[in-house]
Image (cartoon, rainbow, N blue to C red; front, side, top):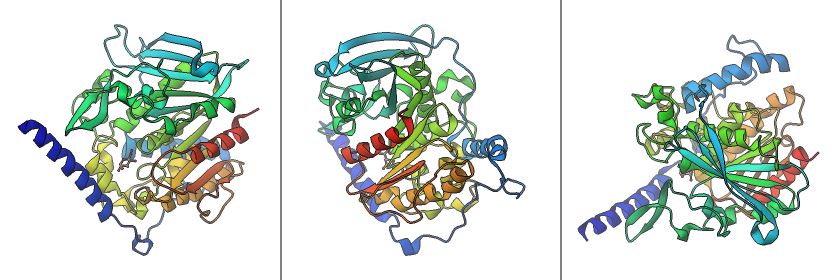
Length: 426
Ligand code: GCU
């Protein structure tokens, strides 16, 4: 009983602390510090990036390296020799006959006892050939994205739901369909797309454990005292997305050359980092990714670098701490992360009531990535001012700020589908 009360008190205190943090942040545009952004089209020696070739061979690798060493940590280059797949389900008539449902285990080691992730894939049942597909990580387990009872319940560590002050880290049936509003599977299928998802906790549980669990220990170097540029959890999740894409490329129901990667919030930061690293992703979507995602760090509006590194010390690499209250010293800012996706289409979405994620800072990242998109011969962002609420702009860079809170809604998906139609449909 005593323990229960203590847990309840801790949970309440944590919630209250979160509210205090949100309230303490700066939301006043007049108090945004004066800053100068690094110019993505200026080489380290001060010369301009004059052409697409120089961008591709010099500047892009240079900026990618800076993000790896200073922000997210390096992704492993070592291949896992024993990675293998097992199709655990292939149902031709799921969702009342609308969908083919496949579930595929990805084992990272030979003996199957090591970390493993499960990919859930829906494709239109009537598809006559490979379809373009949206791939994204989810927060609660694959079973949460739909009420489909055939989805396997995740066995991995779960963030869990709190009940009577106790957090259960094992997912239960109660989580089935819990995130269905964020994954309008049938609407996506009706438009001729597939949708694939993986539970992020299969790849790396979302707590600070000193690199001991998830996929980090598979790469021995990182399991000791991590180096300043060792990958954090965002790196691990992004790496997992690429391993999911490796599999999707082998699946005949999916067109591996037309896979869009998307994510919400911390998983939006992840989709951007995955898209920056892995040029096989044909399109990249960030939904309300905020600090360390699409929002410019130098604005220090809403969540700041110091705040995020303090609350979530396991997300970024240790070197990122150098920029706590010191954003100007960072050699990159987040518009350059967007630029790393060029010339591939990228979509950034904000929500008006999500000031913690700095919607304006997210728009400005798109605007300041635009010169790179233009240099590479694309349409870039067809806006010079931040659009009004619920007025999307869609070029090669897409952006909207919608009414409402931090979430993924039908409105968001309607824009993503329209954007994908523009770029991925032959
Ligand atoms: C917190 C965090 C954000 C993050 C969000 C989420 O609010 O401060 O950076 O995007 O959680 O992932 O839900």
